[in-house]
Length: 270
Image (cartoon, rainbow, N blue to C red; front, side, top):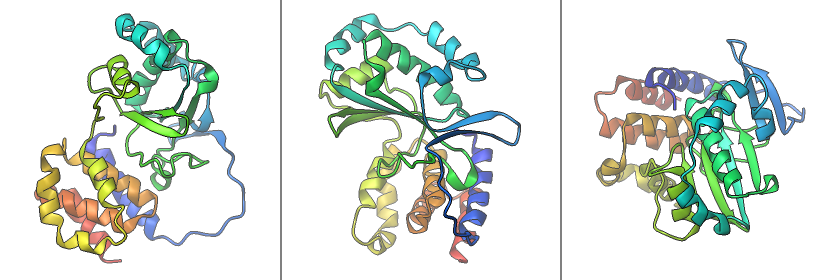
């Protein structure tokens, strides 16, 4: 999760990037590679492994958070037989504090439960303004990701559920609820409602109903950062029409937010 002032800056940059013509390229982007950010820090991008996380420079946080986490063995013992045939996708950013905390814990629980490495795919994502929360191979496509880390649980090719950013109760208890078929909703409950809404054939009818939609999702919104972050993800994915609707909803719910108003004003000029 990014501080609001950083997210706001990203919105402006994304707006400029979105409206700037792109040069066509025929180069092939590798599925996995490492880059350095403006501060010289290494960032992993694409398919990776926990073994890479256990090596410098990521070991400084991965090994520490793995070793210090105490698994809830009572709940994990119930999980063990239920995870044998599951498949797991972990999306994270090596630049993200929530990912650095939660992903080592996820691996420790899965290790305790005897989950094989072949059952787990780790995808590391970008924080660059034009590829915000995207992977070079776009493994996130169609999965409606808006936060990191994300732990997605699959039974064959069917997604049973996901833990978004951090658990609601605990990683062990949330996982148990997912794989045992209990009622479970991850954090940031407003975004799945919007995703479902955006599946309509036409988005034009949504515009006229924005005040009513805002009233419906208001109890589910944790704060303006939830909508701003989702808007930034949509904008970097070049889904301008949906991003506009999200920013407009945010403007209705948080009318005193000058950042959202400024983004809307700039986008509507295009």
